[in-house]
Length: 200
Image 1 (tube, rainbow, N blue to C red):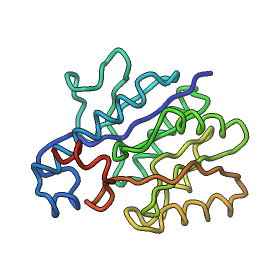
Image 2: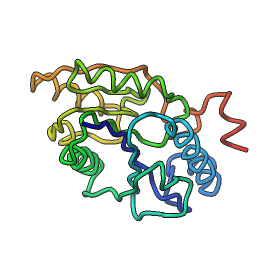
Image 3: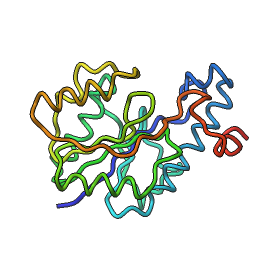
């Protein structure tokens, strides 16, 4: 039995990424920020000792920053974010992966240690969340897909994690929480240490 890390990314195209940030700094600069976030995510996870799968929003790019030797590649499948995440986790489960974690590509603070902690928690817990400061989560991990966790959620609001945990508790599953981090959606999410790199 193997473990897998799934990374959800958007194809980095002008006007299609970081829409809220683009309102503040313009679409060209927002695209530049997102490309740097992708590089940071790649560099953080490249040496983690699990199989890794990049799931693109629109189409697979065979010649981008994600080395095909290290990363398998696929396209997100489904209508909304919840359906796409569930489908990715469910496909991994059907492929006999033991512990399945899924992250986004919007975080400068995530570390190898935090991701390893998620897999360790799954020894004892059904679900693990990495809470983000905006009320969502930057990581979700499961051993068995729980479809209900991805249904009837107010995505892109401050209620996401709260609603997800309520479903977990209602279904009598247990869960663990990783450190709270900031996803970068607006300018105020970028700390002073990262501004020079991301906005240059």
